[in-house]
Amino acid sequence: MARGHSEKFRRTIAASVHRRTETSGTSRGDKALIYEGELETMARFVTDYPSIETGGDLFGFWTHTGSPMIEYVLGPSETAEHEGAAFYQESSFLKSAGGILHDLHGLQHVGTWHSHHRLGLTEPSKGDSSTMQRALDKNGFNAWLLTICNFTDKSDRVEMRAYLYGAYGDGERRQLTWLILPGSSPVRTAMEAIKGFPRSEPRTLASTYEAIPSTTFAVMAAAPQTESPTFPISSFMATPEGRGELHRLFQELSALERGVEILQREDGRVSLAFERDGYAFEIVFPHSYPVVKPVVECRPVDIPAGQEESWKTPRTLFVAMDRGDDVVTHIEELVTTFLVNREHTGSDAPRDREG
Image (cartoon, rainbow, N blue to C red; front, side, top):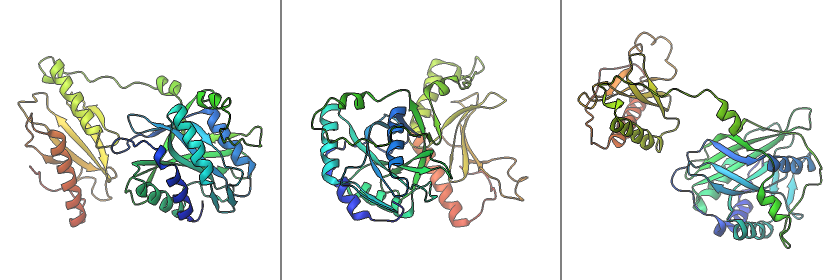
């Protein structure tokens, strides 16, 4: 859908809206889980239409972290409309197939896919993003997955990329990493025996493909694991209560910020770290916490030229946090205030300590 034909798409999605179960809260997942057999099926559909757009729909569910798990890739109906820069699924076909997948396997309509064949556009077009956002908001969804498929330059290999949209996100999306599960989807195997299911099958028998970027559970398990932090025996963080408090704060902060990490400095102090809007923030806990309060430090992720010396010491934003306070709420308010003030002042130069 390289140009926006959004009204027909929104009507088609609305036809299946009653089969959609909402994700809870803001979607934070950074993976899209899918069986390798479903990726191959999608690639075969794309190969059926090498010079015009094709597409279909994605059925599955949402994990507790907000990642889509795709159990079934639905292809185009026989009467779907294929154009050089647009694709329209037949709404009655989608409604019927989605209803059966929901009733038999509890699957939700989690997204759509379409090809840009050889247009050279590996990301959603502006029309795509506008259409996805309006359909998502109009139907009250919290998240929506769009997969874009392309042929590699001068090759028949199909590349597939996954993009996640959020409610009221102004068309912004983020690319997900495919987490590929081995073999075939058990749902596809089960649906082969269901009479009356309006399935569509690709004409192409085999296709080469690449999901970009991708990983597997085996690769993730083999990756080096970060060592757990160690603390002086007298440290509060060395006690079960202290570790429990650190873990609770980590979970609460992770519910609001992406990519939160537990770090330990050379001097043994532990911190909760995350990035937002070009700044790195760390909530640093001293060894004598909770007697001595934690601080929040920040610095630009990319330090502006000419300011390297002034940013050798990070800016301390907060020094008045008490144990028992709603720490995460205080941190969020502090970070937001800092970023808003930075926008108003237009300065990245560090200033005096606050708090």
